[in-house]
Length: 588
Image 1 (spheres, rainbow, N blue to C red):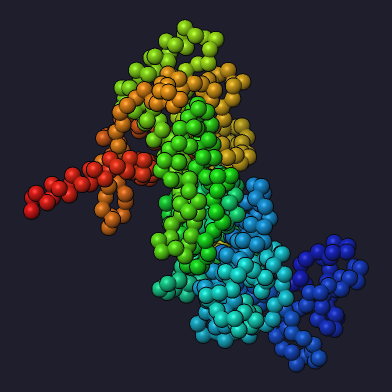
Image 2 (cartoon, rainbow, N blue to C red; image 1 turned 135 degrees about the vertical axis):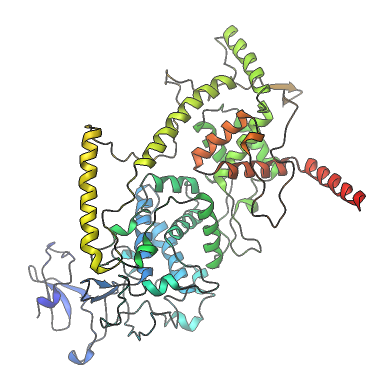
């Protein structure tokens, strides 16, 4: 029995909760307090010392101590796996079921390691010049997030057992190696073993893992589970620090040292962009050869009918508008299952921007009702104001001007707080990154000075304690009938802008202007262009309001509005296209 050799094992005893371990003659850990023997075994490199024993090892990353850093030898993919584990735990804390982490995300990540030939394949890609000795792995996937360990061979959906390897490989595949590496073999330019090689690696057809890519994995998992979180919600939770992203590396175990090239791999100094993560989601889904995702039906949160109701409530618009948005969804076919469901293996793989599409439908309905030309909406507001003054006991008509004034004030206040929070955000991590081990003392000293200066400055500027992190919510604006300071328009009537014709209702406004007269050609990188000066102030305000809610560019929402209009007024666009063709024919 050797107590010194068991010092690396830091887990608490399941019987007495003590951390005091020894080793039996068979190489298993036992508690010196209560003599409880665990199933965990010490890593064995030389089997000649222990005859008649089977080789078993804990797959907890490479536990060989690096003499220069006194930490674990670890691979870049283990760092990304640790970040995914943090994000999965954060989503679980937000109310997402544990199956997203243990089943869906676990298998997506396993599939990625397999497809990128980093693990679970016959000939994994290892660091150049190393000949690893791969040991067997008996780790259960239930605790795959406990440390930066690599995933074990567990049961998974059928789509994970095809494409990247043959059936014979399934029984022989092994995770990353556990080997005895000399100091000369360990990377001296990064804390990870393959940091330098990874930063230079450019292999065609392989999706290279990055920190933004982790959000794509999370969103794919949420989409597979049809959870009630849109992409904009996910990115907003990241922004509000409910989901680890910026400086996620500082939560790595102390034994995982980061420096040099690791700084460029794991260091993030910008907020995730909606369009970028959306493209990465499609890229990852296509690379993994995932099958068609579960159908998005009418009872799913991501269906436009449900999302439209959610955003109508958030921006304080009348409930009666929901009937009109549902009608637009039906006319355009945007509520069809095949249109909404993500299919990565389709010829033209694409997924719907569910939140942006729902908001665009609301914008189209507002244009149908009020035209938004800086003229008609104010005329209709005058009529609604006069009616409400004369009929105070009846259900009030929706007053666009009053709604605009209330929403603009709330929007400006919310945006100002958001901009201030962004300006005050501390990008520097509590765990400094440095380029080399020589720079470590300097980096920590600078970090200590910065923290002290920030404390002194905050004391001088504001003596009150800073508010803690606010609790997550799907809504950024809350409107209730009990709020006497602000009018709630949810129960207001659209009678002032609608007229009856038989058994149907028609809009009093018979005009409509298209957001885009002519779409860009297929080889262009965008659908259409958006110049604020070309559009009315009312339309600009509506786009700015919804763009802020989703944290997207205004031009992206304008493009989506144009696409909805193209489906809704398909005949009008086809006539315009025929006219342009006839003009070209005359010229020739």
